[in-house]
Each structure stands twice: as C-alpha cells, then as structure tokens.
Image (cartoon, rainbow, N blue to C red; front, side, top):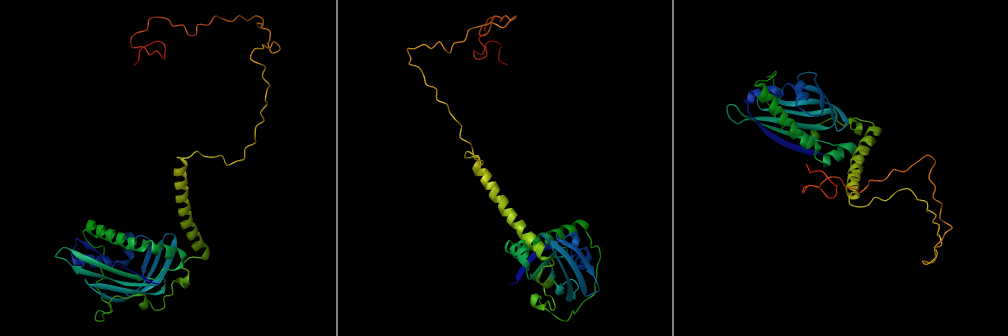
Length: 272
C-alpha cells in the first residue's frame, strides 16, 4: 500500500529565487526535518539519508525531469521507495506558490503506524513552512543550478511505479528487526504511559488499597467487673521519686486583661 502527500505554500520571493534555493539539494537538512544528509553525486543523481521516529532510511534518487523556474521531478532507484515532483508557479513579481507531491511506500511496523498517524504528511507541511522562513529571512538563494534535465520530456508527477529498482531497503525500512521491535515497544510504551496517567488520575478519587497482605492482629478480651464493684487489686500505691518535687501547674491560668480583639481559642494577645 502506498501513500501520497500533496502540499503547497506561498513564499514571498520571486519564482527564480525560490527555484534556485530548491536546487541546492545538499542544503535540504537545513529545513527538512529528519533529513540527515543529501549528497549530490552528479547533475542527475542524489544519495539521501533520513531518520524519522528512530527509523533510518537511505536511498538513491534520479532526477527524471528538471526545468528551471518550473519543475523538479524524481524517483528512487534503490533503497526506500518514493517518488514525486515539486513545481513552482509565479503568483506575482515577488511571490511564488510551491507545490510538492510525494508518493512513498511505508515499510515495517513502525512506519506503518506512523503512516496511519499522518506523521509524514505533517512533516512535509512543516518542511515547506521552514523553507518559506529560510528563503524569506535570507532574502536571497544560497546558490543556484540553472541546468536542465529532460526538459522536453514531460514525465508528469512520478509515483512509486517509476521507482525502478527501488525495493524499500530490502523490506526492512533500513533498520534491523530488533530496531523495529524496539520501535513497536516504544509505541506500546506510550500507550502504557497513558494508561498509567489515567489510573493515577482515577486513584485521586478513590482510596488506595494496600497491595501487600496484612496479618490479623490478636485482640485480648478482658472481662469487666460489674459497675457497682470497685476493684482494689489494680490500684498502685502512689510514691514520689526520691529527691523530686512536682512544681505546681499553671496550665489553664490566664494572666492579664484580655482585649476585645483577643482570640478566645488562643488565650491572649492581639490578632495581627
């Protein structure tokens, strides 16, 4: 199953400036999240290294069509299966609309989960916004390549069917089986963490029960005498410790005059 993403954005620079910046493929990591490296092997071939959500992907891509100020189309030739095109359309003397179409084939459990969550689509949208910020803040392109590739051959918008020889990193999404399992575990961990938070929230409303087993306490029942009988076998003779004299207690005796503002529960002094 393949996924297609189509996004566009308007940038406030002339069309040739927007196009020139896009031809600087090795600068893509500056605004493309997850792209670690792009190496331009020659005028038509690129090598990509990307990592999104802990999944590392590498692929080689071939430029199928490139026309200055109008279009760049590509398709993978090995590694991760993807293809697409970016088009530039003038929206005035100092404004350009950039249209990006990408079709790819998610592989492995981690990418398929991410695909269902729309992670790549959000990433593409974010990348275009950063491209806009980059080119508008700089005010000029960092470089330009004005050559053309198959300019007279309209390949349309390439899809994964045009990615001849690309077989998705041998079906492992560029990572080992252990890494994929770890990614699935991470997703499960997020779900478990959410369940723990919900349980903690609920626990605030209910009394927490002890998890360990408690031992029953022994209770001794003492037989009580009838109410009209006085027992003298439990009385202890009073004796003062040698050399000790108990001072008289002043507890409960108030000194001084209580003001109208005194607190009767405290027993004197004014409230501040």
